[in-house]
Image (cartoon, rainbow, N blue to C red; front, side):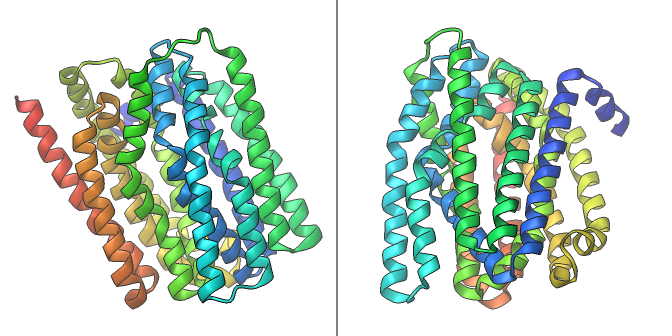
Length: 406
């Protein structure tokens, strides 16, 4: 079975996806390691707090539009790129309102430092360009140009590492570090967007694609919120230093989750082109192979975590080791569930079932975080994610099996 998986990797397109993900992960980890070593724990926690805040409010930029772009372009409708980006720009304004509310709360109840206020202002200014032009990956996946995606990701990450780390070394000021990162990513993404607009073969798109992008964003809203609120709650309940420890602990498992999901990236355009019966049949064919691969990656991660954390991040983050091992376990469970929630249901546009699963997982996560983080610290996040993922997987696959039997 493992041999069959690696035989598939010999496929040129699959290999391109895998190489792209490996390079992306390596460069992301380099940035994470350098920032963690150069900044104090409190500074690194502060930096990640604001990145997490921007990720949290990115739901207002309709990230589901990226899935709609891949769907539409894979079916030859290139006009979706411009249309979806325009919609994302409009809705991003809601995120600005959300950030202003966060800042008002800080000013009224927490007496923030001047640097914190400045970082809120930077995030408010940069929110729209940072979150609205994130569709370049979806465009490349839609046209299945995985070499183009690889080159773009390498250029982006090298550019960000050079600029952000240079500012970090020169200033050791987290305000400048955050600003440099946000401006650099935003500018790079905008120029790639302009380049891809010129590559579009037509202006065709369907309003159904736009509606799907909005629906998919709404369906994932609760889960997106629950998947990003934990860092905000850790900072609030446990402090910025604990957030730094959590960020280091989850960094490598999160990046491994990306590379482990390369099969989903490869299969998505194929599943989208099938009818319901054929798609479910194909997923069932690949599901066991994918799960064996996921568990193999998780086991390797658990075994090498003690060496990796100390080697990369240094002794000051040694307490992150046990959490890293547990996050590899959570990562494995998330990946086995992603075959359903990230591949089959979105490809077939089964929005009602996906909404049910995401609501259950999201609500369980949020309740778990609020109750368990103050009691169990970072372990509260792990308990919550394990329970919600298992519950979502059981409910989802039981309903899919009923559909398949029909």
